[in-house]
Image (cartoon, rainbow, N blue to C red; front, side, top):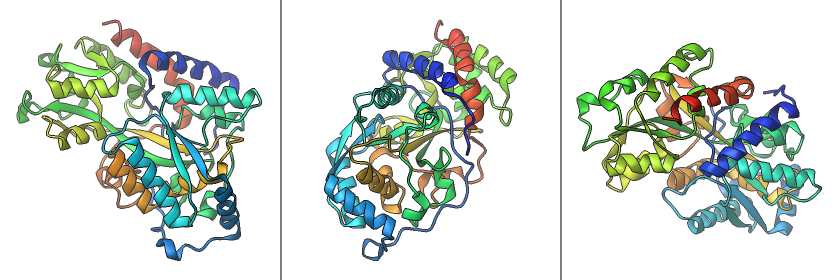
Length: 376
């Protein structure tokens, strides 16, 4: 996908998002990659991986690099940092035969990490991160300024397909995460569970509903292929009258678990699943169109361990890597056949926003929605 935007258009949006991130720690994602297609072939077993000359050269350089720093602002849901790092290192070793020490850096939220990287590179220094797990709109300034390392992803890793690519082939889609209503199973009867987005507007939920402090989720419904701007704005205006209890996604999830809120208008399905597995009285409900957030993997320009980063990125998109993400984060990519994300998408209408619309409109629309909701 070619992104026709200028850096002057991106910087104000990024700056605004960074300011918001200082308040909220992390800014929610708001754009997606290509529409679902059939995924690539399954990766060969480690012993069967045939290394092309290009891949062999990357492996050789990665062996000298020996480590990498992964920026990942996603909260851990099923495994801790040490467990995830070990799983990733083992995956690289088993697949490519090279020892890489994976180190996590989760100190900054998505937009703040992207802004830091942009500033570091433009100042002439090396970026702090080797591989970035980012929201696809959050890293657009890096793409637009030509500050991403280029790899022939499809040529290097035979299990990748065009549907796994974003940013005109310079990024890999790691996960697609569904954002749907969740409810406390002790407080909400089965007959009262919302079945449509409009059901959230029922007066009985006034003061009993939670939602996020960032409002870019609704911009995905404002796309012409979904509800359009007028209908979405009217929905948000009425939703604001429900006096929602606001917080970041982890806080929204906890409000429902604790019973402070009977239900959440927006919650990561992965949060709901993780809490439900721990015995919490929470479940999610499928409402269409299903809002989908997209996370990507990028290697910033001048990364000290760019080759090791490329190997990890490729591995994460393998069957084994997707299983690791499911085990650790309850998240996978709907573009990889057989994953939980792909199975949940079957037969469903998805709100997968186009990058062009989001770049042109998301900050404007988000400000409109915030003016209505956050002041309540």
